[in-house]
Image (cartoon, rainbow, N blue to C red):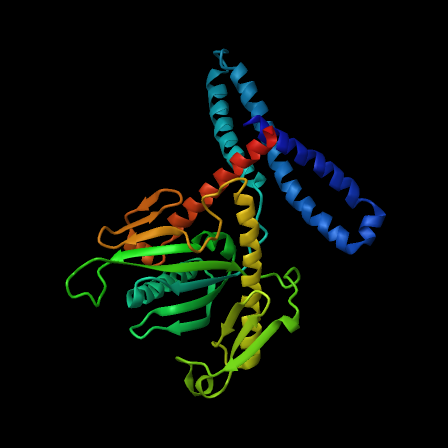
Length: 362
């Protein structure tokens, strides 16, 4: 294991000793807020420290086994023990590296996925519908729940714009790298000459704000408009002014919801989307500032970047940020996104690990 990782792990062991002492103090136990905060940290630090103790034990076992390899009577047993210890150490090192990586507190949050048709007219709107299907199918495979928040249906099918809320385990952490420009190359259904067209959509993935930690919005900064919902939804949704549009006047950011049956539920959902968009704006501004110091290929959330190409004639998906090419486009469009998500998360982990090493040697 690299020396800088050993140093990080030794700090965890020291911090565990400090936390054990702090949690034994009466003044800390009397302050429930502080006690819970330290208890959560203790659980996280303890998990890392315990795996490090195991790593140290197996390292000692390997060293002992290697000293016995020259003993003819003990060689066979020593070889077995050395092989076992080496395999476990490799697994433990990978696990400890993952545990040391910085955690995005939003990774566990539900997410709003916004898909907007771009260049390409009707074909772009149809592709937006295909992307929505891809994400909802992937969500179903993960056991997540999906709910359409707002939609603007195009004349030939598909969507000019659609927002879906996805709830489940580690939703934002899995989908956050989908933000950006998605380009499709294929022969549209409306094309009579068989020519390949290129069109595009933009996708934005926003973490749903934690109500306890969400930014506070001044009600005086909001303009709330109600209107009659359009599209499917039955007589009630089409005959009452239940749809809600909220505008944040200082930034001009707008959110709307028309899927619910009541104006009250639509307003609450639209406010969540608005808050998420404002927080994403703040996040993007901070990321842009950080990127000036260290450029990151993924995670910027820049919606204008072309991040991925879907080439139907070749059955190929290419993610341009990490040079990933997969020739399984049809299954991906049916929701088989796991290889893509895993590759992006692995790339982020490698970037974070490299940053940790640079920080440790600086």
